[in-house]
Image (tube, rainbow, N blue to C red; front, top):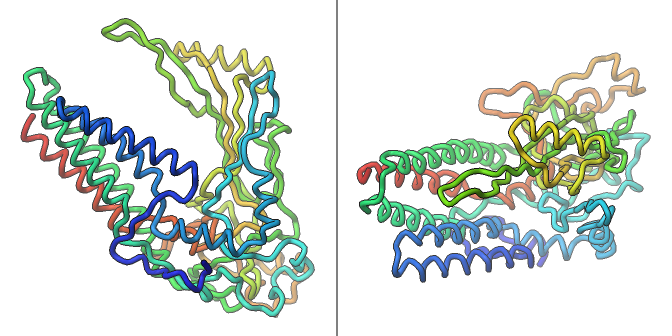
Length: 444
């Protein structure tokens, strides 16, 4: 399959299934849980709660309406040697067997290039704002491939709708029994969860509509205003960043222009129950950091300076790398971690995890921001003559305009929309849950 054969209009309904073996494993596990829940529910209706959990697991393993097709196109379009190099650098690595330290780079990145993009050896760093080659847009630019539209409904609609029905039937049976004593609590929790998911879905659907409705500008003809831009991350004259995660030089990643990392601890506590005691464990964020530096967004027709740190909304997609360990980086930090967790909440630290998200040189990037004229001092310091319009303006993301929310996302428009749900799925399903929760108040 190639991009010309793909219908970018998702239509009303599309049956979607996992396209990766990991997704299939999760999907099958969800299916087994669902079947077990239905079988058990023959004698106990409340067991439909188990089926609801299984259906949710199946929905989590189900890709967007275009995601599987775009994955196949990527496999056919990108140089096999390049794909193999990425595969060799991906996966699980054992960094220290004795200290039980591992690192993991995801093997599948939905935000990566779908069609081939120019490699660093072809970039003209002496003329960063000029056209690349013949000046035509990159192969994955929206002016060449168009803007995709997610299917209104997918298998996620089926799974989540069924899960909500199972949940409501199970809770109705539980609330109708003589043993039920929780009053308005259960309906309130269900309705409250539905309300929260509805609010989240509303903002996601608004961002999706903005991406679908805003035409993409070419860098060479961009003007002052609020344009949508898609291109490749390239370095400015000053270079880029090497991110040292949590101050550990063994967890350094170079060629970054935007990043966010978190350090989490798996903290466990012994809690009392009616049957005695049990261990309760949760991941707790201890430290985090974020930052970035300006970069050049190049779409083939030209480059423009983007100020990463000014964006209030950034979405780096899937994490770039994750480090896990049974112990902290040093003996002193391990002792300190245990002491702090014990003093603050009587917890024991059983695992440590550092996760890095970010934007690197060569990555695809989608930007909706505000273009402003650059200070003349900056233009002169960079040795520019000002003849190219795109070299004397820059993109900022700290000021929204009416109807425009500034955002910066890793991935092209094609990749980001291809992995998105529709506005219907973002809104209708949580509203259904909220209304079902309100209906349960009649049984309380």
